[in-house]
Length: 215
Image 1 (cartoon, rainbow, N blue to C red):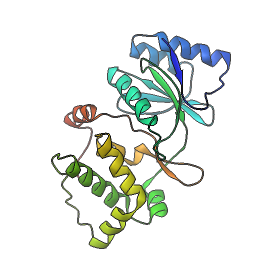
Image 2 (cartoon, rainbow, N blue to C red):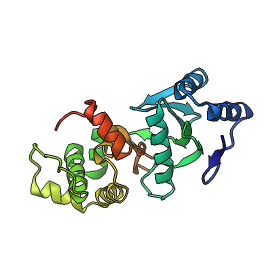
Image 3 (cartoon, rainbow, N blue to C red):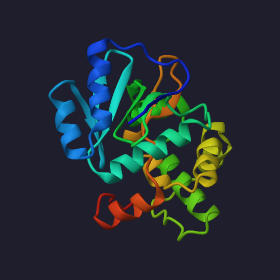
Image 4 (cartoon, one colour):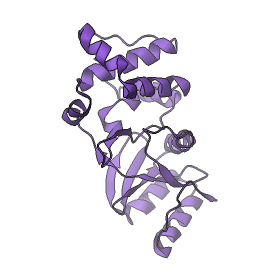
């Protein structure tokens, strides 16, 4: 299985490259994640992928099922569109078993508020509502009141506009994109999206399984 490289390919040790080449050839995603977990340090996990540290500046995202492969492949395709707020992908395999992405600091809600000067929860709900409305989906019900001033401030911000357009242009599930666990912060304090490969089909599946709660 061929490995692909995007801009600025990584120079890995022969040992690590051999591990990734072996991982690329594996057909069973469960076996591939087990293979990686015995060779790299666990960092984080999502619904369909586990994430491992790869040095100080990169992470290795490994599919744990077929949905994880689809998630990786979708994230790879989106990364090629060069949205400034998406973490970069440097290396991947064609079958979606794994990809190597830029590692940034995790973001929490107070940090988000400090950067943008508006509340995370209000921003999250407004983005979801706007995207669902523009895509003619059932609008997300905002049950917690948001002031007109706060709403105007949020909707006029460039980051908000760009995230809404990104979700609309690619027909994504905004509720996944705007989760605080999907956001990170670069060293220059620029907020970015670190987990953006979830397709709308996958979102519907996990939503039906009760992964997301209510307002």
